[in-house]
Amino acid sequence: MRLNDLDEAIVHALAEDARRSYADIGQLVGLSAPAVKRRVDRLRGTGAITGFTVRVDPAALGWQTEGIIELYCRSNTSPEAIQRGLERYPEVVSASTVTGEADAVVQVFAEDMRHFEQVLERIAGEPFVERTKSVLVLSPLLRRFSSGAPG
Image 1 (cartoon, rainbow, N blue to C red):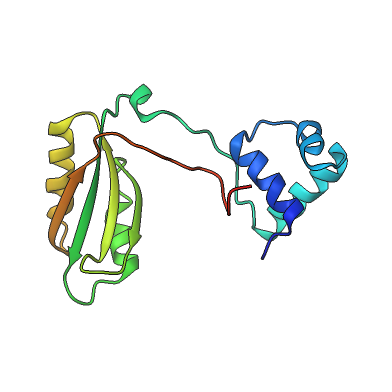
Image 2: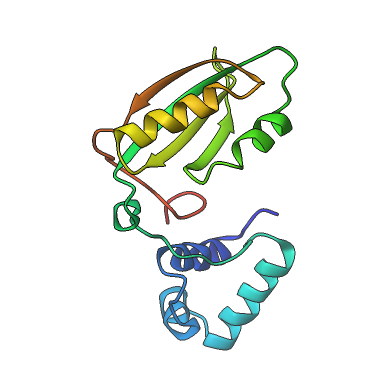
């Protein structure tokens, strides 16, 4: 489903703060609170909005170390097999198949370097993994959480 400009503005407002009131969003986009609610309900019904969540600073939960792991998988490894293998790790916050030499990239948060190393070793030991290459994040420069093009 392609969003129109009004629906996209509503989605951006919710992405900035999912607890924002329908009246507040209405003031931003020029609609009444009931009209915003109807649009949000429709967006949820069509699957354009899949849910509401909270963003937590990983450091507040004790996750001080962030790394990116490139996975190079054995031949004939399906994306589903990679997903099944990685979803067991609470430290993995995102994983995607990619173009290029690597088969997938995995974003990991860990308590410290030793914890990151343990996670890396466990992932590298998965039967579908041939080898890994990892980098540590020094300073996150930009993180966007809203959907779609900037509003």
